[in-house]
Length: 106
Image (cartoon, rainbow, N blue to C red; front, side):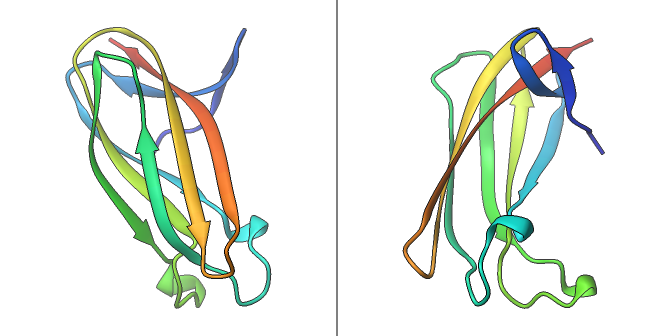
């Protein structure tokens, strides 16, 4: 499991070169009572990284029944730092936008 790292531009998630890695962002503490995620779109304009899959998830083991996590699978082919944008919407019409970096390392 990757954990957030800090560098001079902010936070990033480390990913190994030539790998396929699942990333998930949890909105549990940002959603109001009865609110849950209905869409999640990860995007990037950078080359060298591919967002292969996207999904909404919920943690049934913790008692959740509605999506509160946005997940994607990234495929890396070039060392570097890549900007990712995540846009989610909720059943109550709220939009959340997150910007984060993925850093491809050896």
